[in-house]
Image 1 (cartoon, helix red, strand yellow):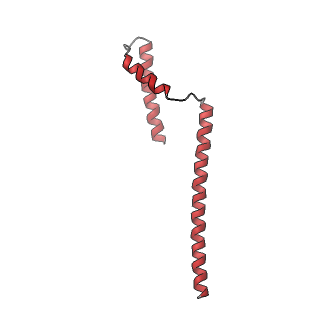
Image 2 (cartoon, rainbow, N blue to C red; image 1 turned 90 degrees about the vertical axis):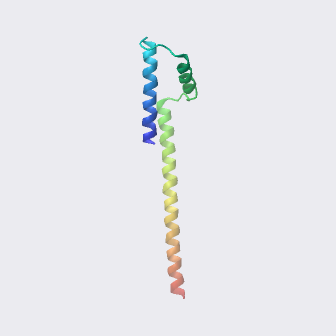
Image 3 (cartoon, rainbow, N blue to C red; image 1 turned 60 degrees about the vertical axis):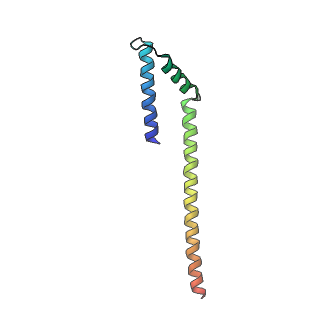
Length: 92
């Protein structure tokens, strides 16, 4: 996840640098590139950074809770199997 976010940030910085250079006149405008940037940005929902961070953290907490509960269930099943095996040996 960290690697993907870093790569995304790098690509956004490249696009931002290109737009800045076109705006200040140091790079000639290319309509095709401008359309591709506009198409890419139009697909991104406008969310305040605080809202995005809150949603991301809640989603991450949910994922961690599910992982914890699945590990707890796996451990409980393993203990139940060992107890049942032990009881079966003692009853025979």
